[in-house]
Image (cartoon, rainbow over all chains, first blue to last red; front, side, top):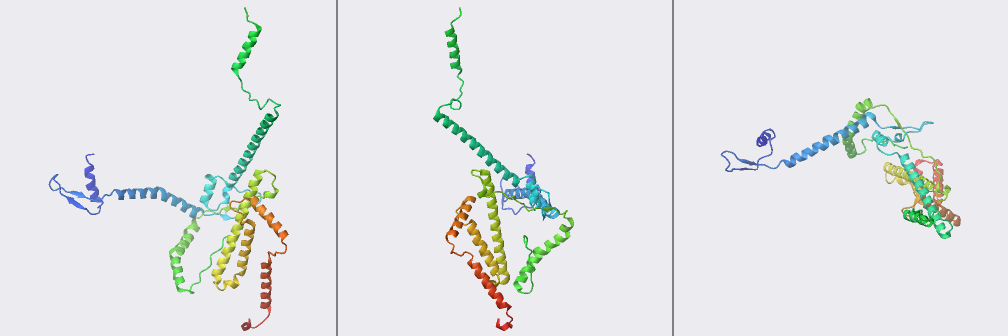
Length: 174
Length: 189
């Protein structure tokens, strides 16, 4: 905390900032003037952010893309050989696209099959529900069966009451 | 021709296009070609293949059973794929016509690009007849119904000739070939 006041003048000797705006003579002490400068905060912040995004963002991306295009190169179109089923990433040309298809993104065929499965399972579920609704409707209309229409609810108090009534009808013991 | 090659530039026809081409050449084409020859071709790894995706044939909408949603989905996807292919065919034919026009010039194109123009016109008409004017969105069932109604209309109006323009062009071409086949000196033709 004590030496911070010494840093700014050292910095100003090394990196000459743009010119001073004003010299204010105040009554702190003799011979020492306050140098009024334009704020360097915005400059510093801008360069900070630029270096951050450039070094951590652009440089690695550029290196990866350069390597993929120059050293690996794009694929050549060939006929599918007999009895060979190509893997799903082998349908793409650019090496980075192949990488994404292989490790990152869901395959085209997979997505298609998932859609088919979803449709199938929804249809089966809907059919089962429709069947249940139909059965309930018919049983309510005909009223000849007890199974689905009467909801099996266990009434413990009623059962207890019935048991106690049976005991009462048998007779109390001495 | 899936990937057409660019044509060679002819220097000496036009001063300004020569200057433009020379600047582009020195700024972009020459450095890129130098880099490609000296670095890329030396250090590139082995070549590896990629394949063209083949879709297995599925039932079309007219062969699907009633309430078979899975079949409907597959037929719809096949329909969309075929429509995309037809759209790409039209794009290629359009590209061919524009290249022909640029090559020949606006005035000579009237004589020399008739084939490309006819092909494009035919493909446009067929696309419109197959996929057009059904409303957005539409499904493969709408397209199937359109086909059905078109066949009914054709049966009810047998006098209407939908291929007349092609017949006319054919006869035009035949007369021109006949005239060309007659041996005559140059100044009379």
